[in-house]
Length: 249
Length: 143
Ligand code: SF4
Ligand code: FES
Image 1 (spheres, rainbow over the protein chains, first blue to last red):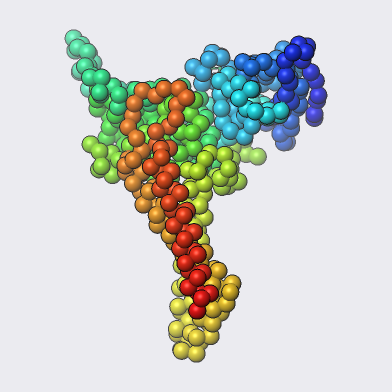
Image 2 (image 1 turned 135 degrees about the vertical axis):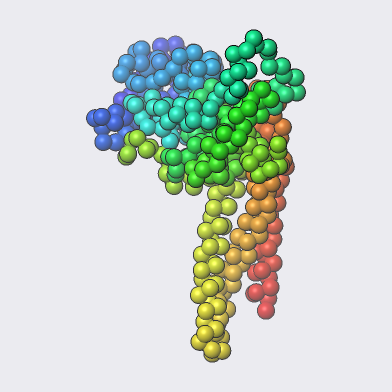
């Protein structure tokens, strides 16, 4: 199923071939690519090109998006072989006449470019992504849990995570072990363990200390290279392991 | 494909081309680990030939005294050196050593964990492995 179309009505703009992976797990036996010729400007993002295709040629292309500004974490996909946010990737920066978009690796496909996030949210939830305190402290006539700027620095980077799943898609362990807890959840475990207000360190370390847990990370660092928010999950995971090995307290 | 357990598979795991030298090091680490495991098994088999007495031992050893055997041994030496040097780097990283400090990241978000110290460690492991290979070749073929 290959289709060549063009939405280039402005002669001044350049054009690329946009290849979109199409697959419906309920109907199709294998993935196919549809091709469109799409015009673009210096600032056109891959998401805008996909939405152009939806608007002008085939509205059935399935893609998830919301904020269009790298904030909601919805539009992760494989763009020219690498996991990226479609709304945060300009066509001009790809430096290629052909842009191929596919669903993120290591996630079940809903349809075309949209993948299921249930497992990512499950593992995220599993590591207790909230401050653990004694109930009495929370209910008593509350005081703020004071924190110094230095204490904030310990975790603020990891609080930038938008749950886009690009890190899980790039991870070589996730490529072969679908039960691996994954860099996203591990980085979030570090985020809370390193928070001076939190008292859930021991229980979190216990959760990730299992056969598909933190020890499966081999520090390939691909997660950090694709993270669009500068979270650096690889750093968080190694620092977290430092707690488990007794190098940090 | 099993959509519910969809994963990139060995092909994706072993593809060293997309994520910089760190992923190449990851791939070489797996490859050299498997290679050394294979060598270990072969080595046990080789040394078990001692049970066949001196003649049996010498006969078997002669098999490794060929150009192919020498190159094979050179590769084992290189794998050993790479696995050791890169292994020390990875172990230190695993303990949180040299992976940078958390901070407020600024665009374009160069990840601190993928820093020059680790890159130097990786390139050193590759260069030392290459030197060890060449030295091994010089010794074995120079006999
Ligand atoms: S750590 Fe980065 S890549 Fe991973 S889910 Fe969070 S924002 Fe996305
Ligand atoms: S649409 Fe929200 S992150 Fe891309």
